[in-house]
Image 1 (spheres, rainbow, N blue to C red):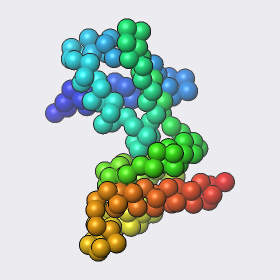
Image 2: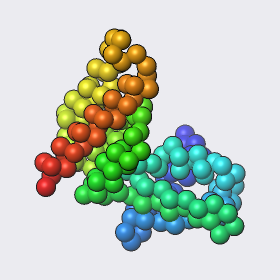
Image 3: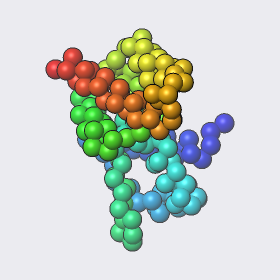
Image 4: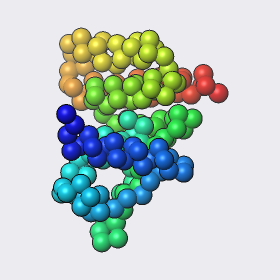
Length: 160
């Protein structure tokens, strides 16, 4: 059985897949009316299911004439993800890493085996360390971000 979030996600994906340039612009309020829900439900779907780690860039402007622009990132545009990681010095949670690896595998930029190896390093191996050199989860998340950024740079080099 599908939830409301699943229905909204499928609706956005269908619109994106049928659009020119894999980009759509929507108004939160109109979509909320269509699904008979609060605009915050639309925000929740956008935040949890349409982010850079899942292969989408979301731009938003609030207000009366506000809009949300959702763009599916094609795999040949991996550079924005790397730039995002470099510029924001992100602390990547395990779920962020898993999302981006699933995206890379889904887009066939890396094999499932490569994705499993990358996950083993950035999730399993880091979680097994309980040393004074990595005392906090925030430091592990920062290291995870750095590892992913370096791996993605290598993926970009191999693809060119």
